[in-house]
Length: 94
Image (cartoon, rainbow, N blue to C red; front, side):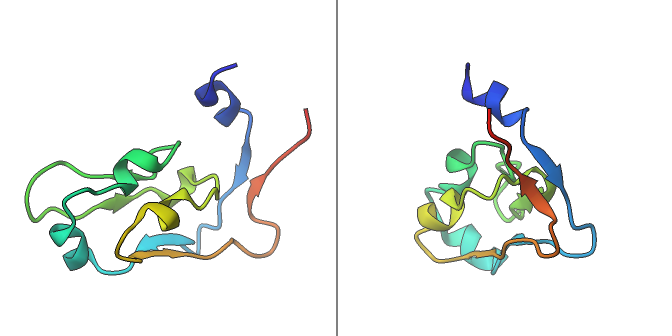
């Protein structure tokens, strides 16, 4: 089974009132040449239109809470908090 197939099996209950993953400072992203967040995320939470000065868009409802973005960002520019109240990813065995 491919990674994308496994990701489709994950149930996610988004917190529509709180964005649990975000870019701390968009200005910092404009100085980042590698933009590792665009490549490391298995569900493409971070997107950019490749235009200088354009912001990194964050589609937090796609997040599977793996934390790879925080590790990959060399500028510590990713804000991440697990959703509260039973919201977020619900993993199942099997």
